[in-house]
Image (cartoon, rainbow, N blue to C red; front, side, top):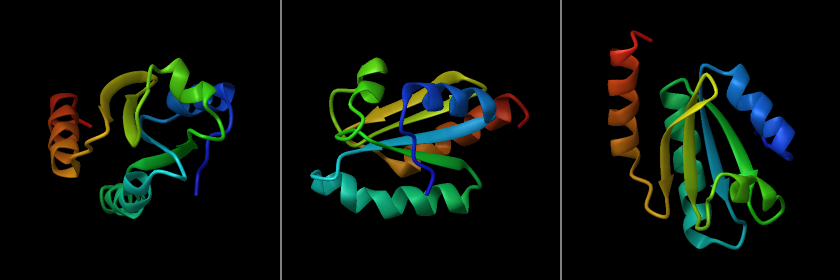
Length: 107
């Protein structure tokens, strides 16, 4: 499991990957924990790089990105934020948005 533990690591990850999904969760959040395996399966099935941030252990990372509720998910393309979802994460919508983005930029 790829875990981000600092803002510096976060910045390195989003700049070094073409498309990367960052999943912000909290160990005490029931929804976060139930969505966790679904996010892993989604990334594996669609060949996306996936990283996790424990928002309880490293609160400065989601705070820097103005995430105040969990679960949350951000998708970056070459360092630029292209998708942000929080609280209600719809994986079908995420898949559609990523397909549209990839088709638009011939990825």
